[in-house]
Length: 70
Image (tube, rainbow, N blue to C red; front, side, top):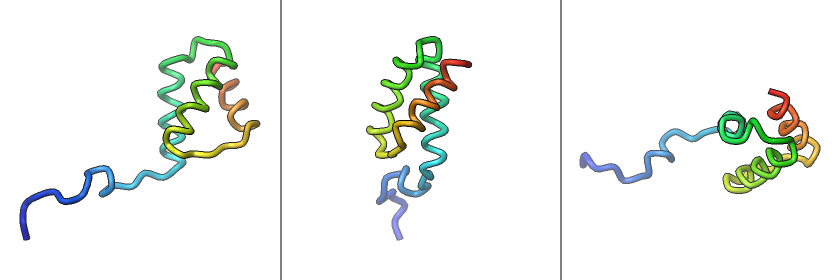
């Protein structure tokens, strides 16, 4: 057995979609939480697509509105 890392570190600790979503929401709130819901929704859609999480349009709109409301 060698002391080398053969797999990417991220693969050793898989993250659930719920945890990814929570992280995206937190980061979006920090980055654009002061914008209107439409701008927040646009950023959310981009970030969700980047990580491969699918949410309904209604869920994305609802989440964006919650972020905009503070």
